[in-house]
Image (cartoon, rainbow, N blue to C red; front, side, top):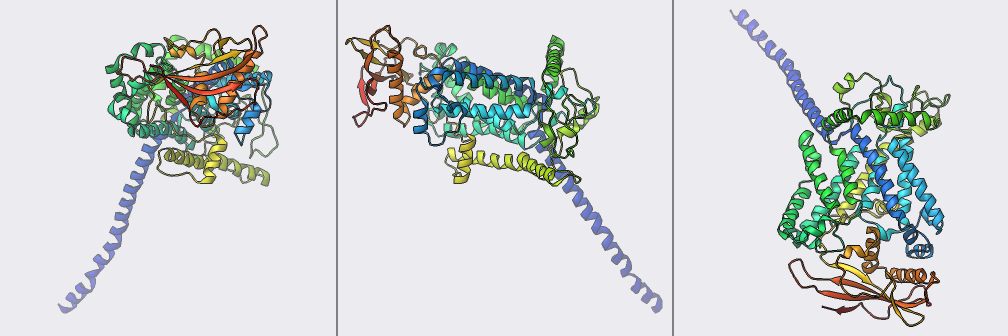
Amino acid sequence: MSNRQSQSDSQSPTPATSSAPSQSPATSSAGRDRLDRGLEWLGSALQRRIAVDRRALAVFRIALGLLLIVDLAMRARQLELFYTDAGVLPLAALFSDYSSVYSLHALSGSAWVQGLLFLIAGLFAVALILGYRTRFVTIVSWLLLVSLHIRNPMVLNGGDILLRLLLLWSVFLPLGSRWSVDARRFDSTRRDGTTLATIGTIAILVQVLLMYVTNAIHKTRSDPWMEGNAVVHIFQADHLTILLGNTLADATALLELFTYAWMVMIVISPLLLLLTGIPRALLATGFVGMHLGMLVTLRIDLFPLIVVAGLLLFYPPIIWDWAERLAQRVGLASPLRGVLEWCQTTLPVVPIRVPGAGGAEPVRTDGAGTGDDDGDADEDESENETVNKNESESEAGNHDETGTAHDDETASGNPKPQPDTDPLTTAIGYGRLVAVTVIPWLLLVLVILSNAEAVDYTEVPDPGDQVLDTLQADQSWRMFAPNPTSTAQWFVVPGELANGSEVDALHGGEVDWDRPPNVDETYDTSRERKYLSNMRFAGNENHHSYFANHLCERWNSDDSSPDLDSLTVYGMSDRSGPYEDEPDIAEIEIIEYDCSGEFIQDDEDDGPDVTILS
């Protein structure tokens, strides 16, 4: 009995001892599984929100090209006025007032040089639309646009800033992977995914969002916006309203409703990134509708259309599936496919070498064994690309009817050097890896800091400021904020001729001091309105002399009338509020200028001469 008890006692701990280790791994394994599932769900949710459909990239590319062409055409109407030595900012003045000028457009003040640069930029924009050597064309288009902006910063608006930023981020995106000449030159046996998520997609989506969020913060600090009457004030600025805007100017109740509606939309704009699927599409469509409304009511140039182009990237695959079916149904697919096929066979094939190819054979861009879809296209999209596996597996690996190329290697091609490459190729590969991953991440951080600085949350370090200034990526997004204008503004420039008579040196004819019925008609273009507004209110008073000198030279270049001896530039304002019936006209003397005097003439008065007329 005692032996049996002793044996039992000696054996009793054995099961307990052996069972403890068997439960611990199971418990830890279950915990790891839950953690893995949680991380997988989180990663999948994040990817769905930062992924962009490749067809959206294609439509975005086409929209960018069209916007560049329209922008160039609109600027060309006053090419001599704003971009030559015969205009308001000759090169001598540009280099004198702006310390760092790196612009091809500043190499010459001749009109023919500017016209040639405009033509070159237009040709690259056409290539961007077609998706021909897309990456290279995108870089050149961005450089030419930055060069143009630097040539005359006095005519720039928020749309210009957004357009060059969208082009900058497009450098890191495979814009040519769908519906392009580059895509049709792929090897048809390769496939790529429908959507992708990279630092490029993150950056360009965040860029559009930053515009709304930063502007919303400015507006929440504004009494007119928070009280619901800001849009009422804006529509009283007759120099800004056009078309439907002139009709709506008196509909104060409706404009107050628009004020609240717009405030709600920009405050909830982060949902553009947080939502997915149909809800995201509906919200993006709401923003598109509001911007198209701005297009037919306010004279703010291409800004609404540029924002709409950026919003295209937020539309999910289900919308582009529907758009493809619609294009097939209405017969658009066949003509577009024909255009791409003609371009594919007509445009020259440019052989290049790809790092890691061993340097033996030039890469062909005719579709035989190439991994280059848009001029070094998607090889930089590395391993964090989102691939829609179901759609990818269902694709047959051939070009679709709209010129889609399916290329796994190029779509997610890792730019890391291959182990069998030579040292030079290895260095190039690592350099490419830095260019397509590290640089855009750093730039995105700087852009976020720039927006935070604009709302006084932080400051950008000096080295970061230099980078942003060099890339023309600094931004603040103060559109109509914090204090929206309600003052109609125009100009009167009486000039004295050599024979003693007085003329209107700005518009010709007799001087008219009355308020124009439609103030917006006193400006030939929105660029001219923007320039004159900046000339009047910007801190650099040299522009007063530049403008006056231009008017003198323009008048005196015409031998059919007596020379202009002097002129005085007056800024006119109707300061009556939106709820007032009587006008409140005031004139401000900006500069009195002697046409035969010094180029830059300073006013002797300590401040502007303001006269209340009514």
